[in-house]
Length: 305
Image 1 (cartoon, rainbow, N blue to C red):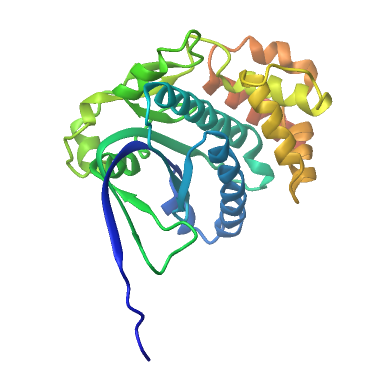
Image 2 (image 1 turned 45 degrees about the vertical axis):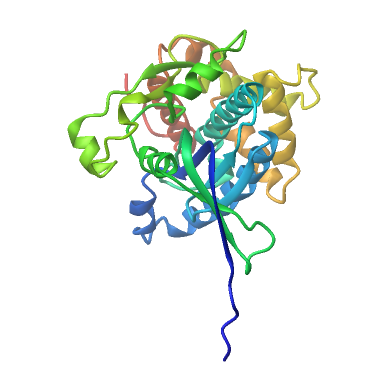
């Protein structure tokens, strides 16, 4: 059998890499109990991630099996800011909907995703003559760092980014997200980054403690409002506007009814909203949400004081 001749094309490049993957996916893949629900979750994540990357003006480079790599080359400072903002908000949106609805996948193990958004000044793009639909892939030190730091410990919405992108994002008049510097311990360098030093000292993570609306409680309120009033008028580029378009897209999918049911029945019932809003952080909010769902599934059980 003749082997077709392949030609290769490699070019220096620079750009912004957005890497997303399922947190603790290895342990999930090694569990016979959770493999079916994980595979269903991954197919749905693949579908919704392609939609969200398209809204950022970036390229969906590849699906990695438990996540994806997206890329954009910022030809101007304006585009760099625009793509960075769109990517940060899309990553927040994806994490929010996954945390609250689990993409309508029923499982006794919660799924969570992490993101890293890194600017790579010295990347390379390459392609070959056998692949015609999306011929180019990217590799670089920043891209490698992006794949590694998605595994760093953090809190919702699990977004890690490089400092130069934070600077670009903060040029906006009303930045919606707040970032704090992420100090990587020696143990984390060995375990997560394999001892890599480059770029580790310039990482930041999104925090939800100082500014609204970026918390899980906000997501709960938005989803509940949009499922009861799907045509609510909102500013197109606001967080609620992005959420509205995303919800309409999700409801149009084959499993859209399951998603809608997950929002309507999977969240804390309306009368408890005031109690939820009184909790002082997302961790307590999630604990309260899970306690209420267990009580709903097992009405005869007694709740802890």
